[in-house]
Image (cartoon, rainbow, N blue to C red):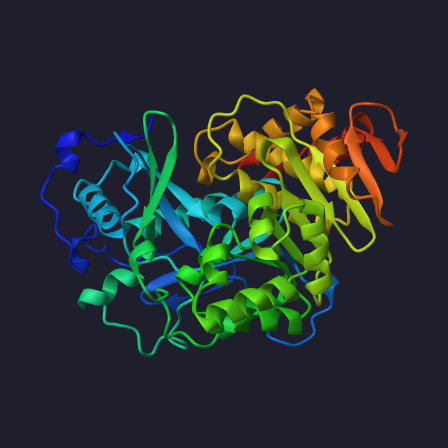
Length: 470
């Protein structure tokens, strides 16, 4: 059960200065068990693979499957009498009041892009996280969680790109502590989120204009670089574009999920708008909810919105539109695939989207059929929804296998056929169904049993994935 905050705690005196954020003494620097070598990052040793830097790496020489960019944080899950108010000033006061009573460590969880990396590692992908963790107890916790899941950690701040960093004793040093995200749950099980990034006018590392050689090595040796809209909370638009441009240069596929930040970025500063537009055009794979697709494409119909992104794109190969519990759609230049979701007992939807992305990367890297990729992604998202929270609570392989074995699709033929029959186009449309293979008008019906029979042998090999035995 999450840590509970009493009304008395919320009524305690509140201060509004920067130093009112949770204050903790910094422990001696610690060492993460090295892979081959380690480099020092602001007195924190972080393990990275021993690699060489060179251009135009052939895809088959990239030994890292997925690298996530930025957005590493610790979630603190709290039960609260009510969610924070909409006013920024009141929300800041609400968050500061929470920070005055540090919760027990058992209520901490890895969050942000850790969710995607952990879910991907549990599917057997080789993952690294590129980002910042501070030299304090939260940073050590996050580093240990990633290590235990078999995920490498590459520090984004090094002596090479942080000569102007604020001294750790100054009042601005909070920006260099591990980011905390307060995940607030009210009595109706509704969620609210607060972090210091919500109240800053600039990214935490806005002064960082270039990528370190360690970050370049990590990108160069990865098959996929995953970015999301929350990366703009830490990195400047220029730094994010530098990572994107370098990924293009060295042949690393870019996955981009704008998330809730996408709408804000689309009306943000000129630099933010430019970076968002470049990511939408230069990414190999775009992932959006139906609401986000409508907002950014200006088109309500999810398939037409996906096709619009493909038209605007330069490198775009896949556009995935997430339809919530209904399922998902994958659109390419020549094909459309649709897969209903699964009927499961939903406990908590936090982390479902991140887990879903991990499985899309799995299908992309393994060149799986489109509908198979959606089926495993829906299953991984559903498995996460059956747990409580994200981080180490995201989908475990045995739960994904159980869902695929159940064949319990949440088919809503009226919903899907209404969408699909409005989009009679030249592309082949494949629809995952519980019925036998066949055709209905222009739809190519693919039997779920056939898809599951192809997926399960991949996932049931007698091996250990991360810390999860299969």
